[in-house]
Image 1 (cartoon, helix red, strand yellow):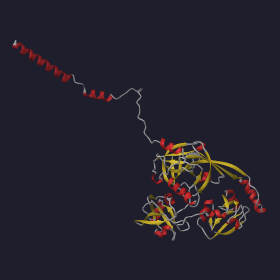
Image 2 (tube, helix red, strand yellow; image 1 turned 45 degrees about the vertical axis):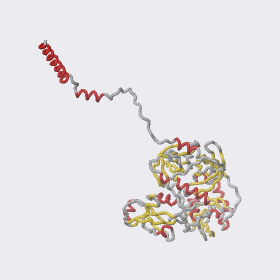
Image 3 (cartoon, helix red, strand yellow; image 1 turned 60 degrees about the horizontal axis):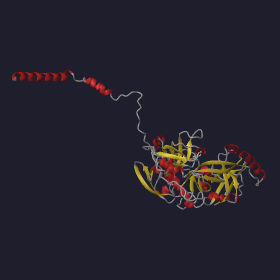
Image 4 (cartoon, helix red, strand yellow; image 1 turned 90 degrees about the horizontal axis):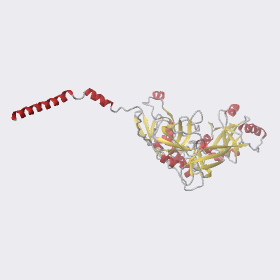
Length: 482
């Protein structure tokens, strides 16, 4: 029995060992086949739909809700003269001396947008929305309507301040437009095509953009360029950041059709804030000047002047008694920074100085040769001092003006001019000027717009020579004292 048991144990152990060896050697899965199976595991049938995660982007809901209640619709009623009809009779008036004819006026309606900036009814908009207006009607987002009065207008920045008689209004707070970055999301809020409370979104495409749209002497063009959709009627509306703060006032579009085709332009809020504060605090714009002439730098000019790069603006000339000259800046310097603002073109310099007032001090950084120099500059007004400008001298002229058409200029063989369309008691009438007179020059400087006239008369005193021509071709010269 013991021997039989021993044989049985050996037989069982051998069978178990054989079975185990066979499984280990012959019955293992093929590694290549295993890899192939694992590689095919994630494959699913074509008709199986896989859910994608939601796209995460900026949230505009709060900013839009904050903005639409503070943006208003503006209807501007103005009366336009029939130019063909009136130019014919202006000629007869000059010949026969008729000063009592009544003009045939035709009413016109313009619309735009505005932004409430204080709870007591101050509203900022574009100058071109309200200029020459006889009546302004303001409609709030809740459909309440008010008549508005014009507090001040500034063609050099295309800004205007108007006011309605109401309290506790929703309003927007100013943001810092210097902090706005290219690529940042923004909202444009306004009333395009009379579609009230319209909000569109886009990004900031560029800053300090000059599009040569204002065309006045001393104009400040340093627009924020965006691709937010802006159309006619958006003018004067709000450009806000994702926090709902006002970073610009929409003013223009780049278009060959008159409608949006890709880019819009807004006036930076830092310029808006300064201009509006001037209207409220002083009743007039307090413009500051460096007292220099300058030009932008391109590759050709840099090579001509031996400059290392094209960054900054080149100082061509410096007024001896101007702010920059008295601080030590000289011709040939390259201005690269004003305070914390980098200067790379004309627009950025105009914006940096345009947010200041006469008497303000700024730190101006210039490249001179191979060194960087810093100057503390006390800005001045156009008259060369730091006094507050209290009244616009153009008001004492006693006239209303309009630009001269190209047809009239060709007929009279003049290249520029500003026509007097209405004459009241004032310096012009006292000097013998008659209605219809076209002012072509002031102190030998050409005049093309009302803002040119304001620019030439800003802070001016003493004698002034005005020259021009009447519609019948008679040239005349007048001297007035201020």
